[in-house]
Length: 289
Length: 233
Image (cartoon, rainbow over all chains, first blue to last red):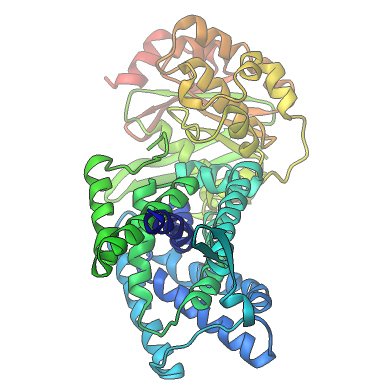
């Protein structure tokens, strides 16, 4: 009984990590309908960026991410402005091909610079600290921080989208590009800003990716898959849905692992397929479109 | 010099030519109406002015400044706002958010605020926090006009604002026009409803298959002239 309860709690906490992976993807798709196949690799790239900043300056990763976030905002802004805006249009294929190419470039670039060795972010005692809940169950401090950060990211993104002028412009642009232009909205700037914001979310996701487990240049595509599944399970265009999607995926994986350790990954994919079969638009689809 | 002028304005959709050398002019504070059958190029004409279709720089001139090649986001900042055909409100924004986004990039000081728009169309104040798909057609049209006004336009372009609405609602909407014009705003109306257009316009242009077929002051034009300009002979 304790084992099952433990699996449920750990599953929800793991869901926080998947929600962080997915939030950036959800943001990109929500604003510019961009399916970014390099998303997982960009998370890994950001983890290496934090590693370098932390290593060179001798900083704790939590401080390093605060330094890396503005840099990543600028990189995201520039990437969208210079490259990805050119791929967006009526045809769905160009953005897929270009981000697929980016994925390969990032993986091989990282391999070239950092080799295939596993790395991890070091933050001292907090890495292994845990809080006993009684009854033989304990929760790790880092997994708990991951979930709390995921919730904070979702709350902040919702506030930006629903309480600020730039958020209104994001939603208007997503609704109708042509009329958004008529309102004086500079579409390519709005897209670039959204990508910059997504990169900041990616920096936070990368921090926990690197703190919780080892990473190396090749693990990006699997993170992309989890992020995708979380977004689709939650329903496109809803940030709270993305959080729920991450939690569903995390729960399925830990429950699957509880049944048989080999089933962890499979159980997550099965949960995704079940949701897709029963609710093709996800659990919390947006009312429109 | 006219306030707004089109000179030899042409427009294409791919290989299809929609406008053939249109010359028009609009004075400050004036209202002109563009009439014509379906497919005559009326909406295309408005889109070309609003910057949704690009032409040569000289083909559209605002106070002598060539603006024919500028994008829509620039044009609205110069004080030209379009109320697009079919309203096209943002469905995931509330009524009030739709109005606010109308003033998003506004560079021009002017009279229009949320309160002024609500005073013009009081029903919108009651519906301010509703999603726009829940509004009636007439209310949606009012919101679309209010949204355009929020940019403080010097020239308001209206594409078929009476389309699909009951006559009594159309009268309500046109009743707002004098208050808009009182701010010195010039208006370009594209209208299917000729009677309505003739009533409010200072001058009328009739389009036929992408060409100008008739122009004049409403009271100087005869039924036969309009009939011929509309359908050809």
